[in-house]
Length: 149
View 1 (cartoon, rainbow, N blue to C red):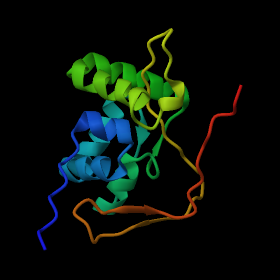
View 2 (view 1 turned 180 degrees about the vertical axis):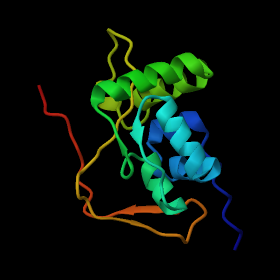
View 3 (view 1 turned 135 degrees about the vertical axis):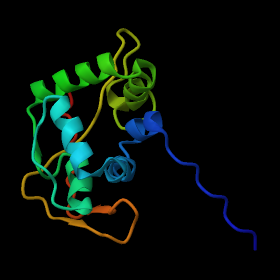
């Protein structure tokens, strides 16, 4: 029996397209709680210092210690696109629509890029320290589906 080939690591583009929570939690771990807090606040989000690595993982997903309105998130993405390398970020946001979690928004008439996500108040979550990123396990996950027009 041959060993299974290792799965290649996601880059930022594929992590955005797939809405990969593990990737974002891993990046939060690399930044550390203070670095993540500075980044979130730098993009205009209201955030508090996460008390642990596991909580920073949740924070990177918008599930703990951070609040934002849809307008604030739009401004944060605008600032992100203007401050960083726009090609990978823009490619990632376009990949969300072309082959990722936002395919229902794809149009051949207008250019659309975006980011999908869900948030649920009081949703049961558990952060497990068993993985390098503090793997995020969500139970009773409700899927948000836009209403059909």
